[in-house]
Image (cartoon, rainbow, N blue to C red; front, side):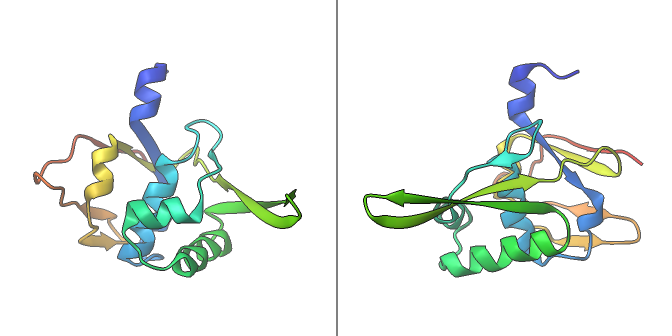
Length: 142
């Protein structure tokens, strides 16, 4: 079992993602994973925060991507409506699915500086590029 420090250092992503998301969607989903609790997958990250860390210019694009993740079963959204000084605000809690099998583990947030160059469904061949052309760790299970 991983210790607390190691849990902060990696996330698990489903292999079922292969071929279902484009590069920007995959990048956004990976950031959402790192902004989620390791064990529960729960995240209170704001769309604005995801927009900032991914470099995507439009918050509506983030909403479109998270709707697609939900449609594909990779997460579910929970809406919490609050009255904030007479103004109704909507907080979204994301519940990212943490797979029990058929997963890949990414170590270190540096992996979020990558672009997926190739993601082929049949072999799940993943090629990463980071700022220094190094990736800390990938583990696949079948």
